Length: 254
Image (cartoon, rainbow, N blue to C red):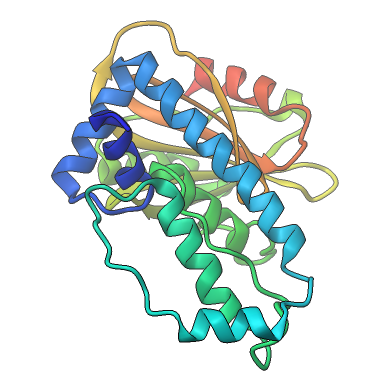
């Protein structure tokens, strides 16, 4: 593996210190080849995750469990360990900790994913199912949301009106991703589906036209982009057909 591949693997595994992580994030903002390699690693992780999930309900032979328990763990070398090392370790832990040591049930293999999108996916998984407590500050205080969250994350914004796309603004809340504050604006469709628009001050200022990138993490679809001094992402349930249109409209109005 190249030095960049090792760095990206360590970034995905959460093994870089904050300064190194910021250096990688700045590189990803400007180097398309690096971003493509990161996307390839994420795609490979997603494929592996699907395979592992399919295997979780299968019985594990007793002899294999016994062999795993009796085999001492190999010496680790963080600097040289590829991304698959963390994934294998996660699966090994699940196999040893299965029900009675024989079955793997109701467990999912944790897969590290890149940057703030992983944190956003975790938050969305919690908050999207809320009704009364979906947001911290309601839509009736939109001016306050813009001032409060804008001052907190360090960049100004306007709350996009996405009503022509069938989305009603519900309000906002403050999140933390990659150790930095994130403004989360929550919208709801008529059927109750929650779509979130999140923004965070970028480590690299951009003057060019935004490039929209699609990804899927933990069952949620994302459309992300960067513009001026901020990074943006729209998140919704997997397979949602209109996230691209939501992102395009949000990018114009925010």
